[in-house]
Image 1: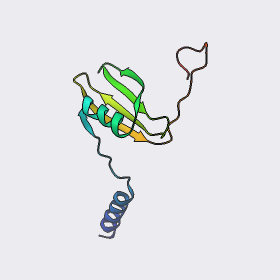
Image 2: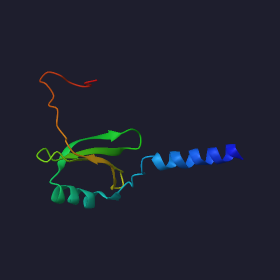
Image 3: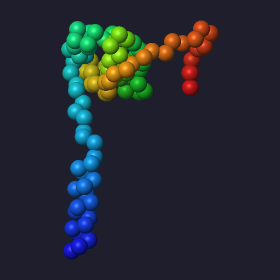
Length: 102
């Protein structure tokens, strides 16, 4: 009995300290882009195709405010906000360097 109570207490304790689940916002790309451009003054800073799914990973940013948003857009035009935040800064590629920087 004591072991069951202890286990139950530990499980509830771990659940209480777990980070909250973040709702992933998805909508038609045009709708999200309109909000990013008009509400946050963000513009497209970079993009690339993701694997075989051909989903487009997009980075939107506002260099003045530092806000940024990462979108994943399906070929059907549905975009999901993967991440967003503040303190964005761009790194300029040095002249003569091409390809993978890693």
